[in-house]
Length: 190
Image 1: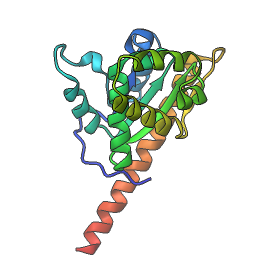
Image 2: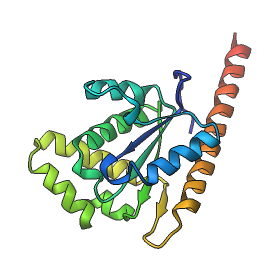
Image 3: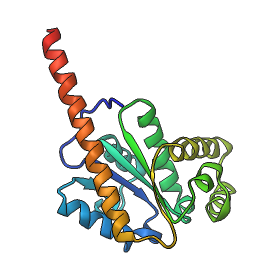
């Protein structure tokens, strides 16, 4: 799982989610839990308005981990979809670890663009180019196929937030351990 990391120290985890649907509720509880556990993160609501998407791509590149928080409204946002394409590209280059979070949506619906998630995806696709749709579908299929965390309709959000925090802490510890091992290995090679 070795991740090649040369990141800024201002954040470690990038949150990719549909703001209108999750921002004031689930993501606010998740960011509060990250703050309590001293996990550095980036949410685009903290970004200056008027900047273009390329600036958010820089924030993704600076991250070690990205949370792709899929919800039924996720594919209504061209920005979410474009960020996901960027995250997939970095994950393919082993520069970013992406953890899919399925918020009251089935992984299969994300992967296959079916159900309410699929309906919203295909509505966005109507106003998009064939090449863009292809990239979005590839990113959705690739990222949703990774081991992730799922919240069902009748599950506890509080417990789910704790589970995500624990998983991110585990992943960050593993990445830090691998970085130390690589660093020590490089010193011995010299």
